[in-house]
Length: 216
Image 1 (cartoon, helix red, strand yellow):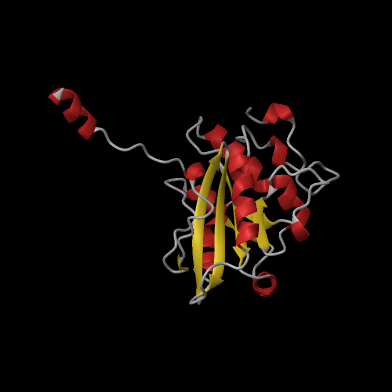
Image 2 (cartoon, rainbow, N blue to C red):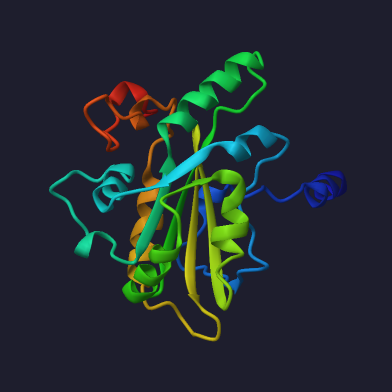
């Protein structure tokens, strides 16, 4: 019995997957201290670009059907999605490196504490930006603000969700938007490839993913 007890004590606690994060566990930090996007040793990925999404694209990204629209389609949220160039570049990089280069793209969502704050920030942010400049220009650039960061790995897409509020404010007035977004991201199936995110020649929006492109 003593040996079993000793082994049990030596067992390390299981690491919690990011997808297990609770929508109620908000840990706000100054924008200068909150964790940004991570790239590992894949420095070339920093030159790949993301673009600002249209409101309906956010719904499609979260796999919400067109007739199911949350209140006002997340008016407090700004999202950035991989450009077609980035998706194709990831595949090319993966092929050229014989499978060593990452194929994972990044999606970044910012949920602001008010619509007015989102509108003001959107006026200053670019419509398209290299991933390598997101930390400096979008996250660190939010001086006088605090952020809570959530990270979710969904196959070849990594989601970064940031809740943004003014320094000194208590609570989060758009907590319902944040809660719904986090719940839908957690519920997403893994993206097995990027074909669901590539725009067709006559269409610039993200399409619904075909069943074959998703893991069930």
